[in-house]
Amino acid sequence: MKKERIRRILIRDIIVAAVLAVYGSIISLTHWSIPCIVYQLTGLKCPGCGISRMLLAMLHGDFRAAFSFHPFLFVTWPFIAYLILRMDHRYMSGHGMTLKKADTILACFYMIGLIIFTIWRNLFTIL
Image (cartoon, rainbow, N blue to C red; front, top):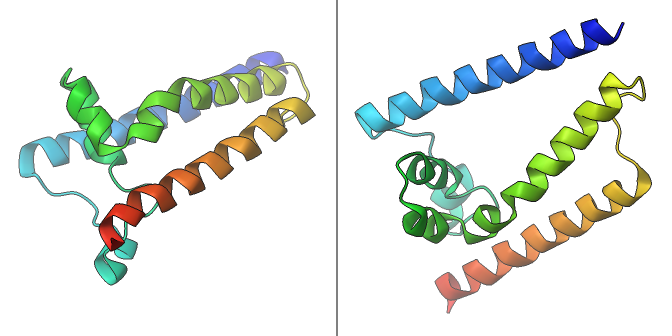
């Protein structure tokens, strides 16, 4: 049973890595990326605006540019990795894809922080 759970996680990670690699290659070669519908309709940045550019800048070792594209995620990505690893560990231990209450509360605070960051960076666009 544990081997099957590990296999599922590995398959998921391989698929995610492959999709990111293909998308990153397309952006690098063609400079075409998926446009943000929220930004196109409103002129305001959504919580995800800048993530693709941030990841590509990080892959190229340009951390200053990566920070400028999405400062909140650039600083907090280790926390996201921690939550994913915690869920994977609990899944492999037979607890399902859930977090403990403390981790769930931390994830909620993270989301609140992301919303506050999104409002903050859009204030400069409006003003």
